[in-house]
Image 1 (cartoon, rainbow, N blue to C red):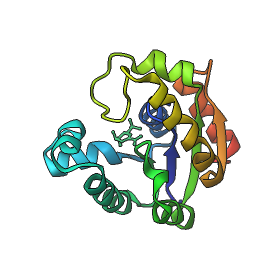
Image 2: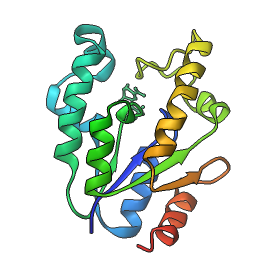
Image 3: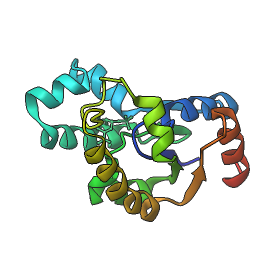
Image 4: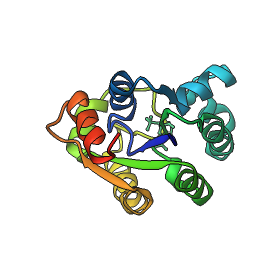
Length: 166
Ligand code: S3P
């Protein structure tokens, strides 16, 4: 079967839900951020600081393509929808699932997490602006949307199995 791409803002649970789905389906699981870090031998924060976001986005596009395999759940970075070619790639190679999580929930999860250069706890207004500007991009890219607040990763994965008839 064609891959499933999980999209959503930072902290929406793409990796944990992806792994829960992997357990149910016995598919492969790839996290494009983890692949980036393993291949580039850089953590993403250091990479951003050294080379900047534009270079990151170019590499991210390459790792998205590389992750695209049959019977694979691909957890993408929150900014994957910023490039139209990423969206077109995902739409033409698999199914896109948007994990829709409230900003309140995201802040609860990520507060104090220093691993994400674009989640600025010290400037919550800028982070909220980033969040709201991304929402229409996630919504228009997705084939399926799951509202995740109040659900565990396993419950979300179970819901996807039913919704996507897997
Ligand atoms: C980013 C999200 C991160 C990572 C990078 C940029 C973004 O991934 O790709 O820090 O632009 O939203 P997660 O969504 O897995 O945190």
